[in-house]
Image (cartoon, rainbow, N blue to C red; front, side, top):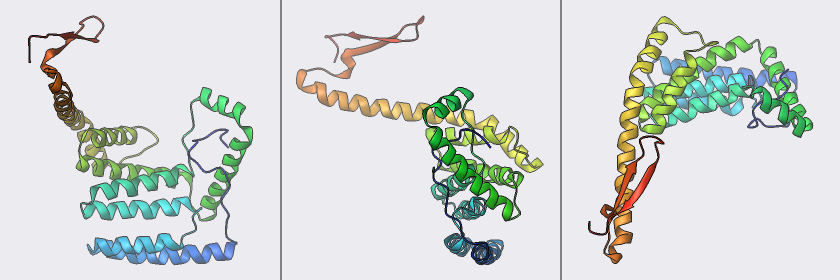
Length: 259
């Protein structure tokens, strides 16, 4: 069991249902999921989302893998519906659920320091993690299943982020594609081609979005600055920024004669 995990995980172990009740709730959830899968197959994506949400409503909250499957399936529907931002959110929720079963470890130094600061808190997190892993095993799933689903959710979030566009979203898409290109992620030949294409094309789009947004921001700042300086008979044209070739920093020069 890992000694230190993400601080975002809840510290108290979740309350679990008795075995009979857990099975009954999971069966109800799976029945709703199966119906939603049929709706997805026929192209009725809105009804499929409703079905997956119904499945979520009855699924025990500590069965994180099953929660993640439903969230990821909702993301798949939202991609079909071109609801890009909603798809990003749903895929992120799926990934967060998987992280509560198979959390990313901190760096060694950080983990050690956290142990020294709060041994009790770390133990509580590990107890919660143990409960979830036991639930995973009890429902005939494994960490390998978690890894496969994480790959799928990352690919869906990356696709949605590409469609959202903009500097931040494109950077997030690039991060997701870079993540799935490394072990332990295993890609199909089709997904591998998609990832390779994205890793080749995204940096160009990212630079374009960055330059565009920076230019827009500077334009707004210039407009704001001119509004402030106008009562003094000045404008931003009175201030010139020059880049230092050695340090890479900028210096500002004032020219009273220019407006």
